[in-house]
Amino acid sequence: MQYRKFGNTDLLVSEIGFGAWAIGGGAMIGNTSIGWGDADDAVSMQAIQAALDAGINFFDTADIYGLGHSEEILGKAVGHYRNVIIATKVGNVARNDQFTVDYSREYILNACDQSLQRLKRETIDYYQLHSARIGHLQNDECIEAMEELQKTGKIRYWGLSLNTFDPFPEADLLMEHRLAGQGFQLALNILNQRALPVLEKASKNGYGVIARMPLQFGLLTGKFDTNSAFPLNDHRHNRLTKEVIANSGEALKPVWELCKKYDITKTQLALSYVLSYPAVSTIIPGIRTPEHVMQNTTNLTRIDDADMKMIEDLGKAEFVPVMELIQKQG
Image (cartoon, rainbow, N blue to C red; front, side, top):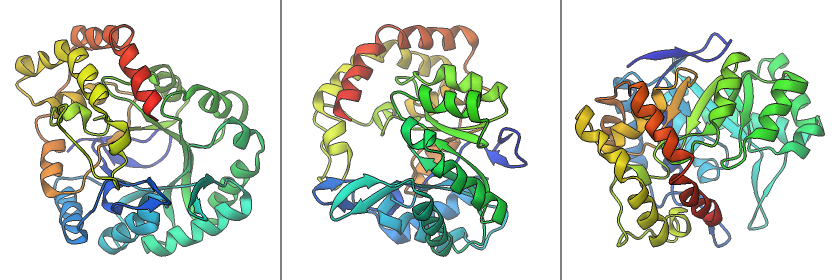
């Protein structure tokens, strides 16, 4: 395992992190799935141990994942490990069987205390506003709450988890007008390259960068075809439609030819692509089994400049309609 500095902080993070959304299980808010289907807590614990054995020291979760269950599992497994870096998020809320958001000072301070209890920690290493938008940030209340938590020692560092499809307004606000926070989490993968301008700007301004969705909900593993189906308590039931799978599969054919050149799997190519950007501090593929740990941490390589350019060129052309379709699905 290789490690990278997280921006201007003193955090040294494994370049492969542990995305802990899936271990929260198949949670629902009303009729809306906010999980990845059923999860076996015993297997989740085995996956976390396998990650530790592989050198992973960065675990990313959120209080909404499994409605707190993901944090509880991490707290049970690694809460007492001081050499493990835990990042969690705040702001997405379930109320009256409805999904909503709350970035008020009172809510953030209270939610942080609850996350600390579930994680069995006195301090959260990295606390993130979960997809707060420009209006929330301009209100200042959420930023003031995060800075207050940092001053009182309940969190070490904080940042913003950016919108999947339009990360620019919020990133620009923090970097250009407030100079607030220490990091960003952004969506970045072979198909979704929209955040590349933010990535470079964040790095130049000393922000750490977490790259999420490196496998686009598993779409870039090559495991799915148009016959694939997902249970109702798996959010991919509505997102990875037959049309999305078919159109992305066709557009990705030139990229998958690189698997032969580098002698790696589609998963390893997708992860290697993201890691080939030095500005990325860590990437967080979703992990729920020991097998996922092995698949996501082995045979990773540096993609050469010509191949990176080829992928980026596709991102500006053939991948554009695919991303528009993915965005339409939510």
